Image 1 (tube, rainbow, N blue to C red):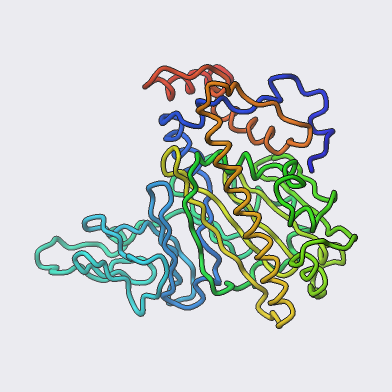
Image 2 (cartoon, rainbow, N blue to C red):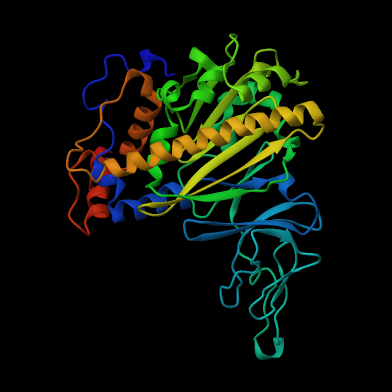
Amino acid sequence: MSDPAQMTGANDWDRRGLPSWSYFNPEMLEEEKELLFRRHWQLACHVNDIPEPGDFIAADLVGERALVIRGRDGVVRAFHNLCRHRGSRVVAEDKGTCRSAIVCPFHGWVYNLDGTLRGASQPATLPDLDPVEWGLKPIEMDIWHGFVFVRFKPGPQPRLSEVLARFEPEVAQYDLANIVPDGAGIWSEDVKANWKCVRDVDNEGYHVPMAHPGLHDLFGSNYFDEPFRDGASRSYSTFREADSRLWSVRQYKALLPEVAGLDSEHNRAWLYIGVFPNLVFGLYPDSVIYYHEFPVENGKTIQRGACYKRADEDRRLRVARYLSGRIDRITTKEDEQLIEWCWEAAFSSGYDGVILSDLEAGVKSYHDELRRLYPVLREDEPSPGTLRASNQRLVEGAR
C-alpha cells in the first residue's frame, strides 16, 4: 500500500482524478501519443532476445515502426523499419534472423546489418546512392542493464540510467544484463479501454486485498507503493510469513530456492519499478517481467510484455517461475475487468470524478505529472479543434 503520509493534508483538488473527458477526447489521445509515446523512451526488447548477428526484433508502437538488430560486429542498433525507397517495412516479421543482409520484400533493396545500403534493385535506373545517406534511418537508443529502449523523436525524458539511478543499489543484485528469454517470446494483447485506465488500476495496491486473492495471499499487508517521482516509481512487498491458503501461492513459497546474488530479504520479495509514462518491471527472485501499454484509439490499447529467466536456472527454480507466472496471469485477468469498468465509468452521466484515498498516492502523483505536462486537464473540455492551442497557452502562462 502507499504511505499515507504521502497524501496527508492534500486538498480537494489533489484528491481528484483526471476529468472524464480526458479518457475519450480524440485530440487528447493524439497529444499523448506525440509527447508521451513518441518523445519518451519506449522499451523494445532485451539484448538477449537477439543474441546472434542478424537476429532482430521489430515493434509497431503508436504508428511508428522500430527495428532492433544485432550487427555482424555484435553491436545492437535501432532503426526505423522503413525502406528508404518507398517506405515499406524492411522486415515483415516481429522477430527473426537476417542471415547476411536485410532485404526489403517490396523491391529487393538490400541493407547491411549495420543499416548501410548495400545495393538497390536495378541500380542503373537510379542515381548514385551514398550507402550511409541512403541507409536505414537510425532511432535514438539507450540500453539499461540489457534492456533496449528507443525514442522516435527528441523529448524531455533523460537517459534511463538517470531516471532509474536511485534504484541502482537495489536493482544491481538482479544481474539483469545476463537474464535470458523464457522461450515464450514477447506477447501482446488488446485491452478495451483508454490506455490511462490501465495505469489508473496498476498504479495502486489499495485494490489488492479485494480484487487479487492470489497476490494478497502472497503479500498480506506487506505490500506498499511509493509515488511517482522524477519519472519513476517503486512498489515492493516481502512475502507474508503466515501459511498461504491458495495452492499455487503455498507451493511457490515452499519451492522457491535461495537465489545467489540476492540478499535474504529480496529472496522472499517482489519488487516493481515503474517508468513514466507506461512501463512496469517486475523483479522476482525466480524471473524478471515487464509490461507496457500503447494507445491505438480510445477504447483500444495494446499491452505488450515478456518474461525472462536466469541463465543458470535449475529444475526447482523453473517450477517456481511457472508458479509465479501463474499468479501473475490470474492477476492480469482480474485487472482486465477493473480496467474495463474504469473505462465504462467515464461515459456515465453520474460520473463526476473520483476521490483518491491516502493509499492511492501512486495514482495521485501520476495524475499530477499528467496535469503538469497538460495543464488543460485542469480545465473543462476544450471546444473541438482547440485543445492543442489551449494547452500551449496554459503551458506558456505557467512559465
